[in-house]
Amino acid sequence: MGSVYVVGSVNTDLVVRAPRFPAAGETVVGEAFATYGGGKGANQAIAAARMGAHVMLVGAVGDDPYSEQRLADLVRDDVEIEAVARRAGVPGGVALILVAQSGENAITIVPGANGTVTPAEVEAALSGRLRPGDVVCAQLEVPVPAVRAAMAIGRAAQATTVLNATPFTPDARELLDLVDILVVNDLEARQLAGLEGEEAPPAHAVERLQQLGVDTIVVTLGSQGALFVLREQRFRVPAPEVQVVDTTAAGDAFIGALVALLAEGQDWGHLAPCAVWAGALAVQRAGAQPSLPRRAEVEEAVRKMPLVVEPVTGV
Image (cartoon, rainbow, N blue to C red; front, side):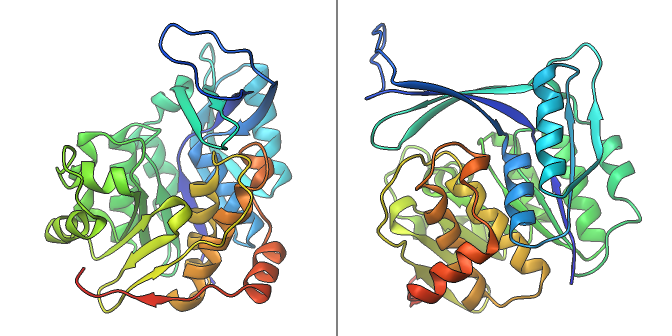
């Protein structure tokens, strides 16, 4: 069984729940405030660890009390943090998250120490450590050169490279030649494919991304589930109907389950429904890391309510 190496952000989420999003210039009275561990890197690392994977996180935190709490969160979930740098005089990353009653969210990120992660640090953490069967997973909340280093080292070691290309930046296109599995939502797929202004179906963006050299593309579709486009097969897994509380970590739960099961060598027919169910379980709870499900929960959900794998043509 392989290990999972996550290169990504560590944030503190400052979350306000409100009836709705305010309009420009409007003040809305909120209903609750809470502080949680977050950051796509930390979330996906913890999500994978809760699915049973051996996980190491590569990133950076500050020297503030929030950062110390975030490191403790990671250790509590058995994520290795030896490659998480501590930056003196630099604050840790912070995300300001507004959650509406519908469960939808709006997020503003201040990168802090996340913006200081270097290719040299990634090299030092990963070189000589990776083996075939391992999975290297990264997002774009740390600098693109650091992500490129992670993808290149993973590719050279014959590990599986997974890129969650969010938040979108045009520089992400330069990474695609090193990516084995690309995970994006519908909007990010269109942005990466250069179709930002078009209301094209996911299939159009996927076709363009395949032309750019990505073999396997996973498009998350929110309440509609996810589209999986592999070299030999194409299918959709619909999401179960659930009561939505907070969508903040749905994508991270999905990816954490996906990379954990990839590292085990599980086939797509099994891991795809598990990943969709992991995301569906996460949206039913408040907070990013508190919402991430454990493996037993995911397996029970899959057993009680199996999700149909629907073949797709024309992609």
